[in-house]
Image 1: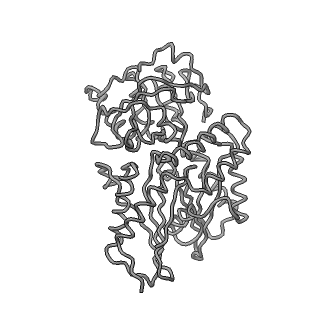
Image 2: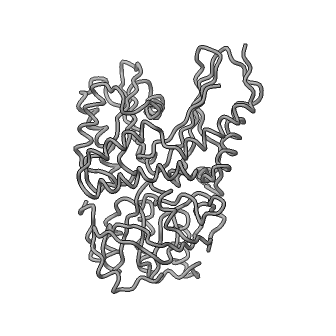
Length: 273
Length: 170
């Protein structure tokens, strides 16, 4: 059995926090460059240019891509043949604290949702999957709340027509409108339970964008890009960079659908120990 | 900086401008406190008359820099507080996204202006901030009110003093 020390996990998380917040994902950057080339309208093109410039400046100077360095969501895939020496949860939270401090990232987490109070770097949200093998895969997704606030979910009837589901997803993007920093990346979860669909929608954002898409994803992308929301909501072709959908089996009585929208600064970083 | 009537009058929804001068950061919790202070007729931590508020909570300033990443946050969350602030003399706001009907009418009534800053470009915007000094509510951390000196800050006029809105009348 392989042993992974808590300290190693802490150090890895710390590095991932800085990387995710300062270096834009290469698939996202490529997609931004591609829509920049396609955009003809002056203002939309100028905004996309600023977004691309922002990413390169952030990387060069080690600055946060966005001041909203998010609520860090940490995905752990723990091999069932690996053993952790020390406290896993504590290691993740300590890693976030040290990474956020080192990277001059923002204290955006309040310890009590109702009382609010002084903000800090943690605690973060952790999702753990037990998988075959003896490795630990760690992914840090700092999720900004301008876009997280636009998340939606609905429990449809099992007999629902696919067009109704499509309409719900498109309406979710429409209601985000100019507020959540378009062009968006739309994560969708279909199936499971209410809570699991929401998790799938968030996990869908981790999937590389611009790669092979299923027909439903392509169709939604096309329709969303006809909404003319555009960069900053000021019109244009680039409303959405990608639609990623994750599916899961569900109950005979239901059809859970969840939408998790990401701003154009979709940030995540992964390491395997 | 104090925005004067003459400066506001000439701005039209859709204009792209560069702003140089003093602005104040304030977002959710600072708005709540300013709102309460105005209602209770308490002294405000800075002169609101003629002032410009930037909806922004920056990251910490790296060594040798005036400020960290400092883009705009979603303006809509400030909508419930904004009409009273405008009544109390606020003349300019900088943020991202659309505003409520109530805010648009108040902008028209009190002859103010709402600007859009490049959304999600916090690293880039930091280049236009020359100085940042905390002036109030330090306990709010990144939501404290900062006095910023900006130079050539690129903005788009979102809603002008006639109530014309770049997003249309949605």
